[in-house]
Amino acid sequence: MTANVLNIIVTGVGGQGNVLASQVIATAAVDSGYYVSVGETFGASQRGGSVTSHIRVSQVKPYGPLISRGEADFILGFEPLETLRTYTDYGNALSQIIMNVRPNYPLGVLLNEDRYPDISGLTNNLIAQTQKLWALEATELAVGVGVPVGTNMVMTGAFAGVQFLPIPLKVYETVLKGLFAGEILDLNLAAFRAGVKAVRPKGRA
Image (tube, rainbow, N blue to C red):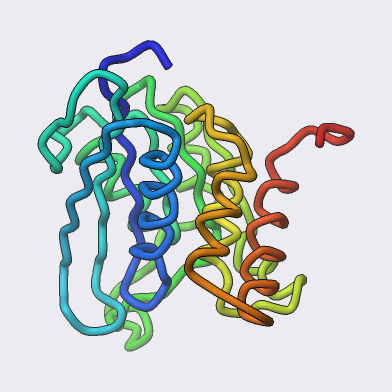
């Protein structure tokens, strides 16, 4: 970690669990000795509204909780259109992104009043503008390990796996063990590990 502060944004819509994902990432960073500030913005209070968390991590000092426009170093996007919107507002040519490719269609799209962007085109657009993009079928990975509501833990595992923050995986798993117990813990660990595996080169532990 060389920058004075690393700016991470976790974005999605209400009900996807991205606030919990932010909590896990922030706690893992604190437990690893970093200064961490967290701020949240909500597009709507009801399920389905935009929800964005700002995580600022530093080895030097605490920073204010909100990230300025164009200064996101990493975007963890739970929903494609929200990822694009967040990149447009906060990203730059050096930003890295992990994006779940499963859409969560807005009401206007469901009512045939609006059109949702083509996922392939949206993804290619982001690839062309950013330093690195991982496009994950995170929802399908969660279903595959028996945790249909575990997309947030798959995405958290993917973030941990790419090692944008040099935090050992066991630190994240310890955080999960502090939040869950029993079968719920096992399911969340399974989803987390599926996310790690999805972004790790074959043969890498």
